[in-house]
Length: 375
Image (cartoon, rainbow, N blue to C red; front, side, top):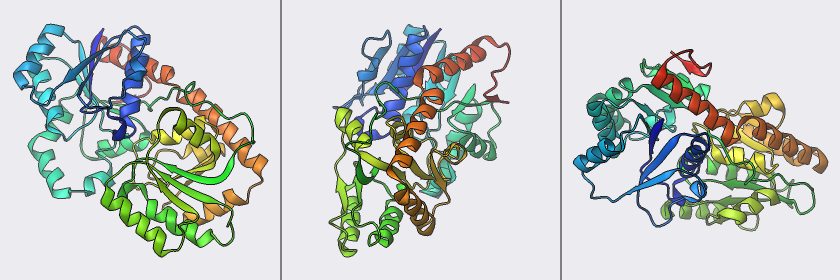
């Protein structure tokens, strides 16, 4: 089985997909699939996950033509293509070429078809759906979603092809669970792309209302984003006179990132929309309880008592934070230990790769439909 996985960028600054896509390619290569990851060049490509595997890289320059892509696909004779997002012209061009060459393809929306995302630049996306995007979706062999909620939203758009529901995986060995309460600080960590959809203002407002009661706690907001937006958040913090307890910091990577998770008592992602939320799984793997919203597919937090999944509002977040910050240290620590076990059992990248391999086999060879596929 020879498979091409395509994503326009795996720059470290591109958020969760820059980690989850190479990791899926790694897991599939370890499972025996002849994998190639194709992407455009950037200075900080996140390729370390592929080190030591049989997976190959095809790095494109911005001037590459459709003809050159077609010639490459013909020379490599791929059995299957997985496109790791939508909207951007290169995904549409690849879908057209795949159809011309009769190569089946999957599309992974990566949250781009969620209601919140569709409401941004609404008319432009409606036009794109009408002109090309819906055709690309309807001609796919399968739409690869990461949660029941995302699959439901894709189906509600009228997409009639099979849908798979396979979560992102993480390298749990790389996000090791803390083994002691020692060194854990009274800090609430937000670590993600700094963007309007992440609900950061709601976190700031909720914590501001609690600060007098929990004056020894801090909030760290860590990530990259547009400087205009970051500066607006800094101004908001200043106007609230919270500069001593809310810090906005640049992104961290590697061991510094893992240490930041492990040092934090609580992780908070109050997002308006996530198709998965890699940082949630990473924090949990490190032993950190999580507060997130029902706009993210993590209601399992409530079911397993490993965190809080709430309706998004300042009041709801304030109440969840208050409950968490009032918990005894040992109880909060144990909640994080349970969260780490949950991630290991359900979201290890090797388990995710195995399910993806089953999906590929079903698409190419038929047979019994996998349980995680909806027709």
